[in-house]
Image 1 (cartoon, helix red, strand yellow):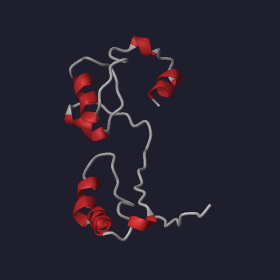
Image 2 (cartoon, helix red, strand yellow):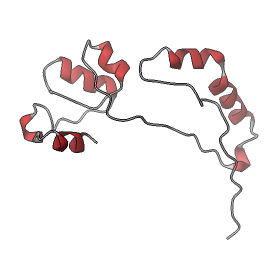
Image 3 (spheres, one colour):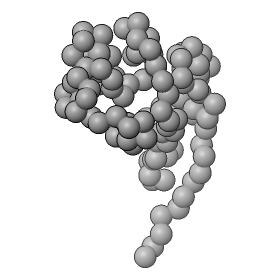
Length: 116
């Protein structure tokens, strides 16, 4: 995604400080930029804001949790579903810049396993 954006703007990766630096999380990306070790990086908006950095959204991502049908009615999955559906969690997510809880906790589909 970052390579595509750089190419569209005619920027060679070698022009950017820290382009080859690898970190393992959004906050580490923001910390590297804030420390001057990198010019840009891919991170979440809250991580960028935590370090007082600018933020340019590149794309929106959606994440789904897939649970095998055989486990869908288990106590653990039902508890997870209650947590994901809770007003408290929805409030926490919607308070974060760039996040939405619009479908959080919704059961989007049930897919029965095939026999072949």
